[in-house]
Structure formats: C-alpha cells, structure tokens
Image 1 (tube, rainbow, N blue to C red):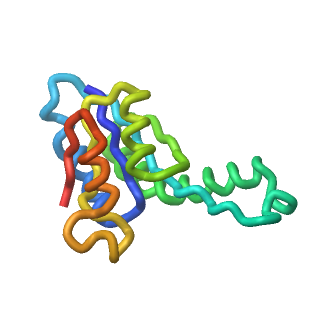
Image 2: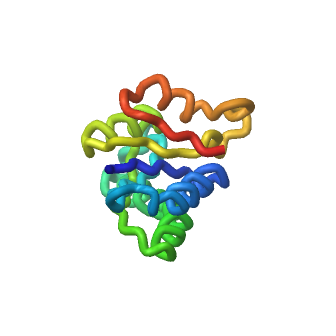
Length: 142
C-alpha cells in the first residue's frame, strides 16, 4: 500500500502523521509513505522577474517547504518509518490529487483542518476539495 501523507505544519496535519504512525502495524506489509507539503505559488508581481530569478524562487519554495515538513519528518524518523518527502508548488488540493495519481497512491491521509482559520470552520477547504477531486480513498484526521 502506498499512502500520500499531506502536511501543512498545522496541528491537524501532525495528528494525521501520528495516526498513520499508530496504524502502520495494522497493514500486512509496511506501507510506502509519500510525505508532501504544498506551497502556494508566489503571485506574479510586475517587475519581480528582474530582481528574483527562477532558481531563487525555487530555493525559496524548497526552504519554506522543508520548514513545513520538519516536524512530520521528525515524527516518522523517530518511529523508524521510511518515507519519501517532496515539496510541491500549486493549489494544495489539486497538487495533492495530482501527486497521488502520479505516484499511484492507494490512500490520501491529511488533517481535516489546516492553518487557515477562515476556511476551516467546519472542514478545511483543502480537505474538502481533496475529497471532491480524489478518486482514491481519503482519510481525514481530526
């Protein structure tokens, strides 16, 4: 089984990581973990290209993404669970579903609420959108 574990640095996303760790022993074989975070693209700003190059922008995404992944990586490392980590750039829900298809994942696991208080009153906007877009099972962790 291959699980895409999406994190955004929120408590709910770390709870999702802990939940996957707690249930790894219930699988017949140890699941493969695709750990991802998605950084929204920097909005285009007129004249920005003159001062900030593509490589600088990519480095920014990678550095910010690594900060977001750090706590999840620490939990998985402590539990001795192997994983592959990636920083994606784009719309979070669309990027998560696209990566699931690309990596041929069997399950998506993510927190039910993310970092945005406004969009998370009942169910996080990213979680809701992943539910609608995904054609594989989605595990939402409260």
